Length: 247
Length: 252
Image 1 (cartoon, rainbow over the protein chains, first blue to last red):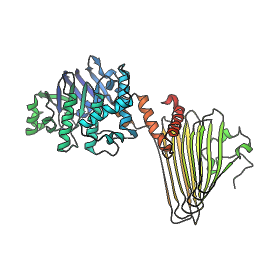
Image 2: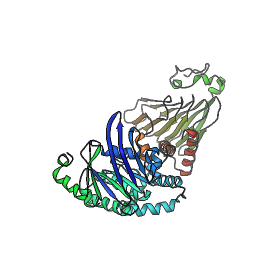
Image 3: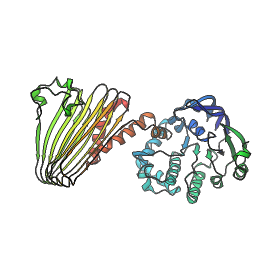
Image 4: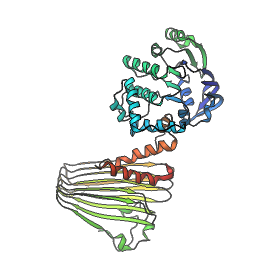
């Protein structure tokens, strides 16, 4: 589904990714772990197409298309979801309004009929319930006044509503307490754990992987994948630290 | 006393950022023409302005006397003419209220402005002014808001809030709050900021599937909506917002 080959990327002339290669097949969940400054968030932003992140070499193919050739909103419409480490506040725009417009914009791009207000609310209610997020929260402005945990749960509600093929989740576990971590983990499983979908989980810690079992774990250091393995690699990292494993 | 025998110049505080050249197309009588409105005690007066002509100048000058416990509510979409200007002088009686919600929009080399003078002549009156300015090209948006609080106008509560959003380099927004307060037990709040569209929010919105045009439109709409939030008629609010957004037109 996603094939990254020899990816080099920089920001403000500073090289962050140095020949990163990775392939994620449909139905797989991959975890990317690594020390601070390894390039984890940069990878997420490059895949999302954030302005300022320049790809200098390599390719990314998503579902047979050249991902890097698509504008950020086209990537989303093509089925890629980027879960933000720091979800952005948008004053004056309610979650319901934002997500309905986003979903219908994606549907239009794919040549599908828009959802009516009633249909959308039904869908939103269902997904909010899944993540134990009060429907009232969705009537409020996007992320404004949300706690860290609420923002992350709201991200997962967005993912549920938009129903992507592929999700890149950038430290979705940071800022969550134990209960919220379980809720978010279960949310990821129920939304994305299907034979057609895949997830790239970017995380510092093993703990989210207790709830979302990865098929593969990769260690990212200095802008490239230095080692890969099964779920046991995450446990080894937790016990021995990055310095030993990534050396 | 204002000079009515000559054309205004930028030396006068209330014309400082105006397009005084455009005024030359009007005769002096038209410039000095003030309309008067009296709101009887306890009554509510509401008026809407929609400036959308393509003339050289569209000028509205309005003097309102608001009686004790009465309300004056003015809402304006200022998006027309080379110079679009709404100037209001409001004198508030005891416990009266003045509500002003206005948006200026414009590109090219246009100037659109609100000039208000709110006179709290008696105690316990309140006033609230919310102005939003969206400009591009070399468009200019101005808000000059003067508030006078008379010596015995205790318990006055006056607020002014201005925000400018510049869509392109070269556009400008000017906010000039001017407070003349002679009473000692009053609240006068004013704030002014000028900025650009939030690029972080735009990337976030793009990552959810909204095109650059769609995200800009949502953000501009949210920005403008504050100006009409005090209007207790949702349909009319929507109508004013649609008028404003259509003025931004192809910039969205």
